[in-house]
Amino acid sequence: MHCRAHTMTSRFVRPCLAAALLGCSGTTSPNPAGNRQFKLVTADEHALPSIVFDGTIAADTAAPFHLRVTATSGTMSIDSLGHYEQRVMHDVELNGAPSGSLRRADRGECTTVGDALQCVSNYIEGIEFAGTLAHDTVTIVQDLVGEGRPVTYRYARAGSTAP
Image 1 (spheres, helix red, strand yellow):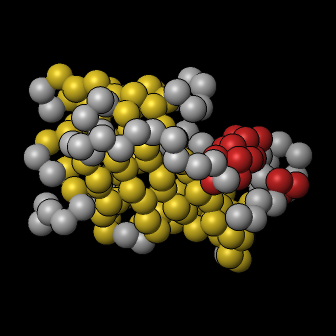
Image 2 (cartoon, rainbow, N blue to C red; image 1 turned 180 degrees about the vertical axis):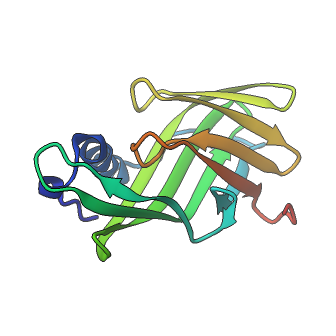
């Protein structure tokens, strides 16, 4: 992963640095029978790869720059005890030039009431998100880029024919 901290705002640098640390972590959640595996199929209502942020950033300490972030792949698993693990890969472009990849990884606990899903990270402080878990699909809205634009990420159960 490549992060050009000297050209990015702190809103993007912190998530990028956190992603670097998370990307090196191993998986520690249990994998009991009943584990459901999901694959990211859409981001921002478009099939992958999908642009999830495309805009000019008014940098705090440097000239404004153009940032484009594209979701390229991801997975989510939820086991029978409610433990979740989520990974999303993004390609990053700065001023039109490829600038590496950003891997977001998280794990924590989810509860469900009907189709409603509420998850709380036990890995990244202060991260909570809601979504739905219906049939073979998980849908969640998150700002994984860190620029204040929540995006809908939809995961289909591995092996399902969910659209």
